[in-house]
Image (cartoon, rainbow, N blue to C red; front, side, top):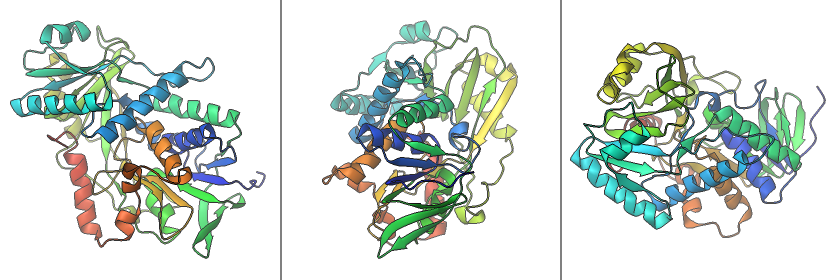
Length: 409
């Protein structure tokens, strides 16, 4: 392998977030960009395990607008004739099973309207027309967002790469970062298994290894890998790719069609996490075995809406280590302790669906002399400049996962 050329911007991590940052940088006119990925190919770690649902209904205007920007980007990428993210804008249903959730839906509608997002409550008959094989008798309210959808995470990452590379960005796989050199509080270069790369800015988009990359410059950030898994059934009658995505928050479930199969996942009430210190930068995150008890519970909880699910065979199980942060918010932006070291991590399971919006916020944090208050609030300084401890941070990060669909979360 040849040694790498220097670059103004070095992005560590070739998943959906890292490649979205590269795409956002070239869109902003910054073309001297190098993405480093230690694996054989891009999108082979956390991104490869993502379910690909894209929902815009969020509990704050800022998060809603971030998701809307991602959807706008996915639609633009899908219009390209060469490399597409397999974006299907089929809409999504959010199903309430109790009165408290109905009240929450009304609050979410108000937030969506403030952000300019089209949503509406529909009746059971309308929902039945959208998903003919589901049984909606138990639904107390159904929230419909017509511009939601789903995509293929690998295809999305390749689309980002294609467009970024066309404008000058470079991508180096099988290239592991071993150190980051700083001088007088500024990032100076990145050491890799293919040599030293001088740079002006380093962007940490290393997923489950974002903690380890931050430690290379002396930052201790509470980025906690939390187990997540979902199943894909064997082919099932009348499931087609044009059906909407769905969420049943009271049962902590989400799903979508996967060709002619059912993709079904959920959030566990007792999460399993790994301290990032349990594995090194040079190692992979711990292996995960299928937890059939958890997966069976997903099917059991979905049965009132779709009884055949309990008899369906499982074709495959996906599991991975998305990273969570104690306050449930992204870690985006430069550290006050190390100039030009920029975070793009702790995505709380929004790394794929929110990737375009995250990339935009990262670029705003770097290039805009007056970033928005929201972007400033995502800074790693909220952890480096305050006191916290790992046992508490781990519990809180797990709690973010466990309450992912909790009321007002």
